Length: 168
Figure 1 (cartoon, rainbow, N blue to C red):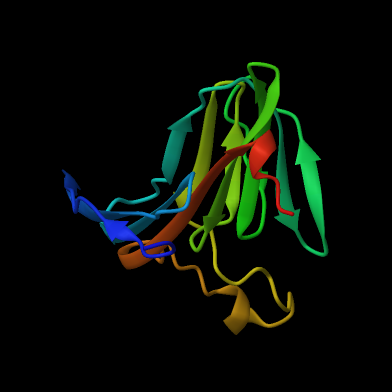
Figure 2 (figure 1 turned 60 degrees about the horizontal axis):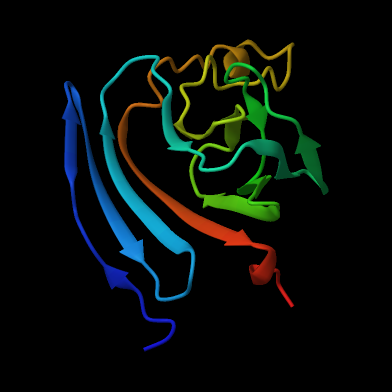
């Protein structure tokens, strides 16, 4: 039936002291997959990323930002770039335009090289007060060094397409 997803594996990954349960949901629509994760994060000051090798050389990324979208070129190393819930990587394969887009409910940042695309899943904050009012000592003493730990639910939708899959 069109539109109905079919779920596949429920792999469990453990890297002491954390664990991750991942569910893959493969849609019947061409080029779509959803990843649902339940993370029990007990690592300290560790950034977790969903890294995807690209089957095409990346030309640029387009990412939702506040009130607009930003276009960025790949970096030589994984340089962090902020974004909002979606980011897309565009390139060419066999002379035709192709893309990989990710919609994300987790941390909104990514990095891109010519051959790899990484979306931040969990990013430990350095502080939580953001210096809201520099004169109020109570607000500025809200350092929470382990607020990234604990149980978290994350979801990603991956969309892959080419020239023939442009929205109409």
